[in-house]
Length: 51
Image 1 (tube, rainbow, N blue to C red):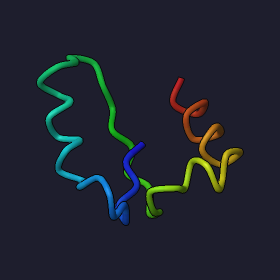
Image 2: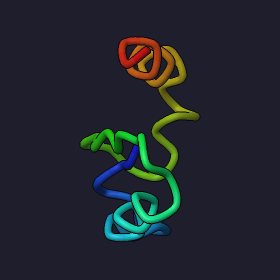
Image 3: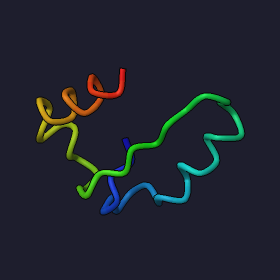
Image 4: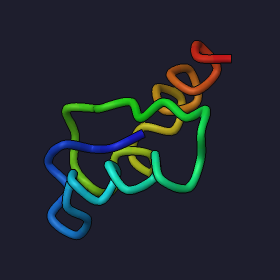
């Protein structure tokens, strides 16, 4: 998950992951840095929907 409004981690940092992992999906989320912490159910549901 890549929160698009993250003030601490730039979205382009997620692009580099494709160089390290061949089978990866980056999921963009219209949220801030603390979204997984402040919305744990939504974050878990999003992850589980990708399995």
